[in-house]
Image 1 (cartoon, one colour):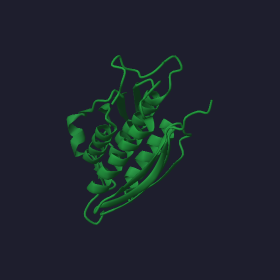
Image 2 (cartoon, one colour):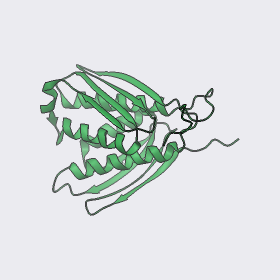
Image 3 (cartoon, rainbow, N blue to C red):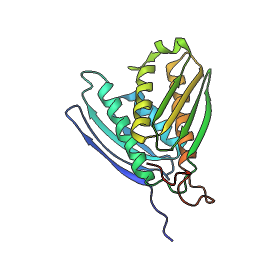
Image 4 (cartoon, rainbow, N blue to C red):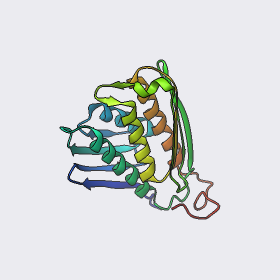
Length: 201
């Protein structure tokens, strides 16, 4: 029996952004990402590599204004791509969790692909001021929240330590990729949808 390919084509064009790409959930961690936001490219490369997703993504946006529209629209596209690629969610593990350290930084991502959106963001008070390389902690928060909303999942992010934005968000995106990989994997014991309701919308 031929294995079903779990993937999606990414395409979104607005007056603010033009985004195209391709996602394969069961990949090898290959990434080719060019959003125009160097820091986001790096975070998504880490996300794909550690989550073992194959991800090609290019974006042209109104970066002469700021990074907001591109950051948000890339998250919209990626969230929708995962939702499309997972289809009816038959056989998936559904839950995933991972803690990752990065030098002095440590973060955790917890995921439930249950057909309901929720986003929880727990960070130390000082983290709100972290910014570097044209990207901020708020940009990272907005990206993850928007992804969760469009993928229709529960995503809880907790940052335990770290005062360097690069290391903090690196820990976050690595944890996010690994947890999402775990949640999207097929459990050979599972017959049907992993919900007592019999469906995940």
